Image 1: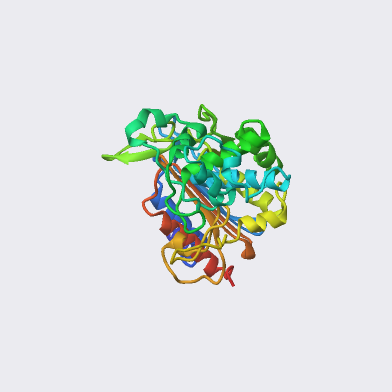
Image 2: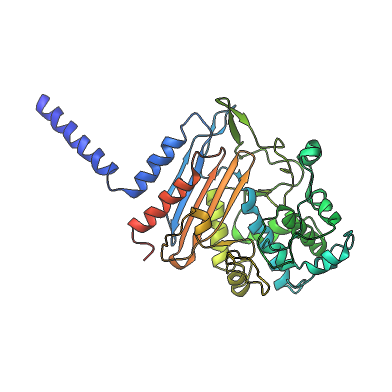
Length: 373
């Protein structure tokens, strides 16, 4: 009896050692499980290779009060990953002959204090964060106002700018208000709330049946609440506790890892946008008057390459297309390696201690499995 029990324990130990050594997917799982315990805010992570989901796990709580657990269907605020939806909305209008990326924004906003600014800035500059428009919103001085400010209210101060930070196209400068402006352009041309246009033109053909976009009140069902750790206590940091959170164009989309996988599939299968414009949006935009010492690294909303994502220069022999999100306690990353047919998504309802380490661990799986060759 003891001999049989000892043999059973030996076999069990051997199985556990085998499982935990040399299994790259298990290493990622251990990293995430160590970071996000079951009784705290957590994460949902997906890795897809080709048509196969090779990793799909969720950790922690969506709601600290109700103890609702995060699942692969939990909706998170995407932060700036939302900008890719606005960008695609603009490109859909272009494909339908309703605008040109060469249009000056003065065609859509005739109330700039300095009209010459609006004449210089073109839609392509807004899409690529190369407009030079200064962000002169006084958020800290008008905290309560910007808690509920929507797209129009966020873009209005930009119209009062007297000068540009640089000539459009000369260099990169990340701009949230640029995407509030783009959302308003969609509304002007579509003659409906831009949120509905995106839902009808992108969510519906992509099969994103649960995803939502902020338009006033925040979504309250099936969503994760976000948290920040203050003095050892998690406090809610999501629905209005964060400046400009109500602004939808720069960060108002709510989705899950599974619905974002459907979004990526729709992008690649050209379900809502043709191949030519899709490829253009995911290629580096090279302005003719580029004057920065750093080479361009962004397309139309999408970042291209890996150096900025990983803060390192070592190459992986392939190209990355990605966006990250950061709003309130929410964090997100969405990474695509099209030529290797890889998708890697992480959604979090509290800031991870080291999101780059989580990203790198996933990428190391691609290397171990020879997916990048």
